[in-house]
Amino acid sequence: MKRPRPPSPPSISAAAKPPLSPPPTPILKQKLQRTGAPKWLPLKLTQTELTLPLTFPTGQTFRWKQTGPVQYSGSIGPHLVSLRQRAGDDTVSYCLHRSARPKAAELALLDFLNAEISLAELWSDFEIKDPRFGEVAKHLGGARVLRQDPLECLIQFLCSSNNNIARITKMVDFVSSLGLYLGEVEGFEFHQFPSLERLSRVSEDELRKAGFGYRAKYITGTVSALQSKPGGGDEWLLSLRKLDLQDAIAALCTLPGVGPKVAACIALFSLDQHSAIPVDTHVWQIATRYLVPDLAGAKLTLKLCSRVAEAFVSKYGGYAGWAQTLLFIAELPAQKALLQSSQSIQLVKSSEQKK
Image 1 (cartoon, rainbow, N blue to C red):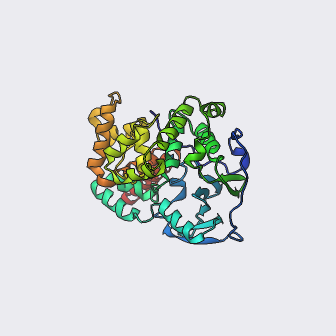
Image 2: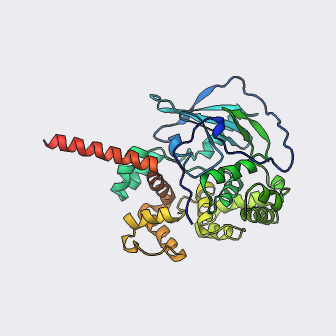
Image 3: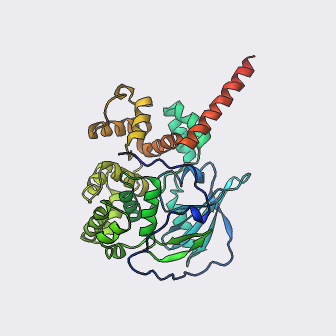
């Protein structure tokens, strides 16, 4: 199964948004408490710890929109937030467009960004284990792994199965539109992600009419399965953060439409399973070039997926999923061109020094 390869950062014009089918039931556009005129505040993360274009449009989440040159906006629970970076300013700033509790919103944002994890320390450790990683990280530092709400992450990756970015975004926008309306930023409408109870009132037929295809039965089936969990589906998903990786993967795979690769994505991007490795054809190619060259030319099977994951963990340790994420990003067209350009400049400088 291929992981959708994110394109270059999209245009910020409202016209670029994929059209949405209307939700099955009308959504009242309720407004939360206004925070006053837009006010940008410094976040406790520098650009070396968080680079927005290397974090948001890279396939981890499909709910955040580019709303400025280096600005991304999205909702975290009931909070509507924008993050931005400006040339010459080393700090990342955030703006709360809608929030009833600004302090709670800041804490939720830092939690969402996994802010307690130091990239500088991780990169230093990875560079010792793999000098090539150090070369990549010099140019692509600040690529963070997000800590999303598990239900939100699960539904997004059910939409991503054998799909392309434009269609995934359209589906995720449709699901998001079922939640509480939070506001608009640069022509994009934002909603709080719908609750499990709200999702349970959407039928498979309604999802199929909205263009979900066979994924409709997976979403309704998964919602139904979660509702039957003792203590509720939200609590059950959160409890997976306390399990070992293989137990968490096995539990996720009991849900309709969730296979090992989708389960690994959910585990890495929402369940604190930092060593999870979502193996697709792109990660397979990275692994056969640098970690398991003896497997080059072999056909990717479930057994070999496990071997690739083990190779990443053996090389990088307990945060192997973070290393894999950066190496995956380095293979995206825009970042690959940047790396090649930097390497060419270094070769020219080296040649001049020798002369």
